[in-house]
Length: 330
Ligand code: NAX
Image (cartoon, rainbow, N blue to C red; front, side, top):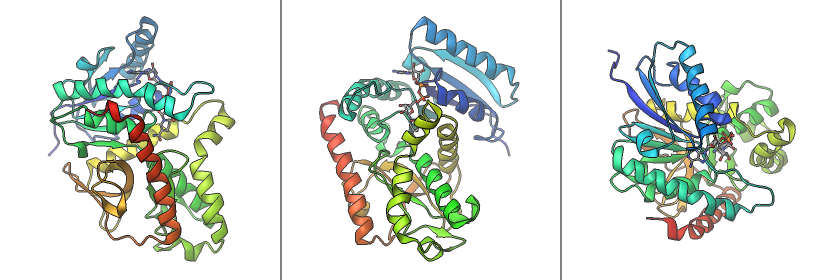
């Protein structure tokens, strides 16, 4: 029987380019089925930004989606996060020219402290997806400033990286994306991430059997996935927006539904120490969802020495990031 009780979904950075591709798919029924959706759109409390946000809300209204029950536009996180079931945290400060990653991390920290606290006040039952970069560490900051909501409810997006890896393997093997499965992204959503081809399958067979060019797998494949964001900026003059929005929809749908038996998907979730990743870090793993709000990290995947070194490198970066924001963790 369909659920007629509206689900409230807050989306931050709602006047930005990812959200221009994301909001319509959250509202249309594609993500939450025929359940009515109340979209709560948060962006900066600046008149020009709020005016742009109103424009997006007008377009959402003009789609006439039967599933869109209400739209709230606001510059106040307390309004946006009150009573929500999902928070999609896209809004973040962009990396300025010459800015180092550690400056970006420090600059964004306060946003996620404030949003974590707003969720603590108004959204005890929330599940959060952090897209805004550096997304793993931003998720860690939000989670640790939101007591009352279990850390496990905070996830960060590596699904775009998974989707990019699937596409690369499919192109190399001359098959369709649908024939690729069991691709895992390990670690940080950054240039150190490890797209794991050793556990990937092509039509059920190990990818390393189907693709004989192992040198390509170990070098070009990994680098292409790691550097894809920069390649898109170079080609398009802007960062990936439609593909990022699509991956966010995939992420939410994967957590909202039960993962088919024997499959998994990639998401950055709080580590319980699995695969030697220090507990408490928000790191990408292979994950299965029970479709009822619970999920677990897939255990027992074989990791070669090559894979181990790659995972250790990306996890070391996450540990450094945690040290940079140590004073921001509540
Ligand atoms: P835009 O600059 O188009 O939009 C960002 C929006 O966030 C702006 O409207 C801005 O006003 C708003 N914003 C800034 N601070 C805010 C705050 N404190 N509260 C609410 N809103 C705030 O960027 P866009 O291309 O949409 O990208 C958004 C974020 O996604 C960036 O941090 C980007 O790096 C990150 N990405 C993450 C990806 C991932 O796979 N995890 C991939 C795509 C993307 O690079």
